Amino acid sequence: MSINLEQEFPLSEDIIYLNHAAISPWPRRTAEAVQRFALENMTQGARNYVQWEQQEQLLREQFRHLLNAPAASDIALLKNTSEALSVVAYGLNWQPGDNIVITDQEFPSNRIVWESLQNQGVTIRQAAITPTVDPEVALFTLVDEHTRLIAVSSVQYASGLRLNLTQIGSFCRQHEILFCIDAIQSLGALQFDVQAIHADFVMADGHKWLLGPEGVAVFYCRTALREQLQLKQYGWHMVEEANNYTAKTWTAAQSARRFECGSLNQLGIQALSASLSLLLEVGMATVEQQVLTNTHLLLAGLTQLPNIKILSPQQSNRYAGIVTFRHQQLETQDLFHQLLSKGVICAKRGGGIRFSPHFYLSTAKLKQAIESIP
Image (cartoon, rainbow, N blue to C red; front, side, top):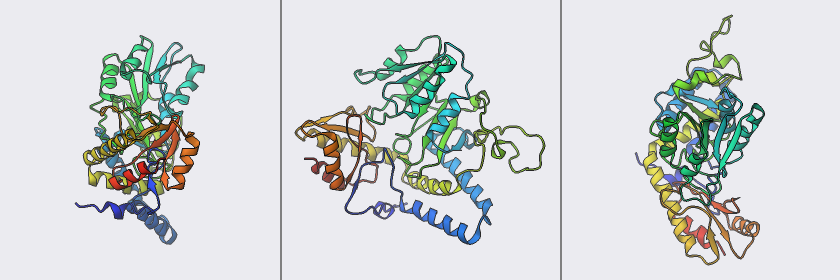
């Protein structure tokens, strides 16, 4: 199937969108799905609710493909990454003296939730991965017999450092340590395989590389661990017979739906499903190849500029879709505003300017962004 990416991403001609690591613009099909759903609600109400439930199941199946999960029943649809992390953090039975190993570059979502467990006697150990050439070993060095969990971002939000998830997952499985991955900076940009990397828990919101809206997130929980997570939220949707409203007894759903306590974000589901349909039609192998090509182009172009210091890794096995750099003559705040004034949509992160182009960005746009740097 031939996809016209210019039609799918009709961005204003006066901008170059390099901020997918923050919030992505929607594809045309996503905006149209929202418009259709809004019109349907206005004119039909919930007349077609059965079809809404079918779309919900389709989204689970789409995520199953993206994650290579064993089954769609391993997929829960939550509100955001932080909620999914909290399901894990407050579902596990901690003992005083347990410790969790993370990196020192984590986004607050993947740090605060673990730090909140310190009142239960849990210690948080942060591996310093900035100066090391082997961040995985830095993580492993902090592990001891009391380590219950290693929790990392697949790609660090500020530096763009990509971790070797297969290596970490194999280590965790060998040492009987749980492995939790915040995949928000890679899912939708890179291929992902929860089985190959021995992931126990994976979560990602839809509004970054997945090209969808805020308010819908995927939570993958390995089947064998579902019942080990204590439930902290209860409601009609998380029971086995969710549509039996008169039942006086209930049991939690055997599937990952047990983590969805109440009504889902149906509007968000329609939108995110449309976005994922584009990624799946293009193919994640193609998406990944183009994301990495775009990143390489940016790295190569920035290297040629005077007064630019690249803060992101430049080894091909360490970068993903994020390039962060600093101008050695201009304040980051000043450069940020100059770029915005030229229509280069980017972010300030990690002590510099962060560019994060998705697969559909043209080479011409990327070169124009580089030329916009004084």
